[in-house]
Length: 104
Image 1: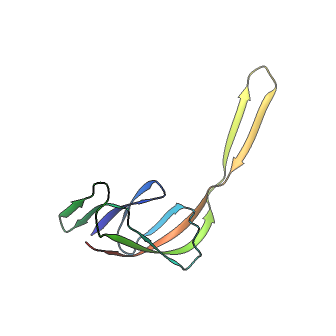
Image 2: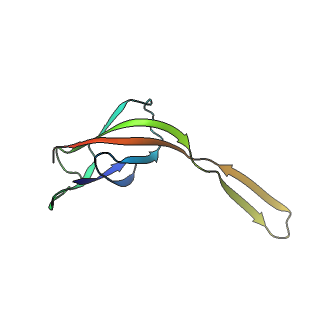
């Protein structure tokens, strides 16, 4: 059994027991978060597709950790002008553990 869930504008395929890395959520570590923005569910070949979401289906998760990703650099350069800029960025992520999919 799996579900496609939308979290902060991005879609993830989840099974029970999976660990997800999503954009940072404002919840504390150890708290539970429930998502009802389920786009599709599949249970042994029985597929339900939402318009846009499947009614009554929820995905329960637990926030495990908050962390930063690897550093990415952005370079700006204009030839023959002496203009160079270098800027770094580290995206913040939350790690979620899927504890259950209900309503399927």
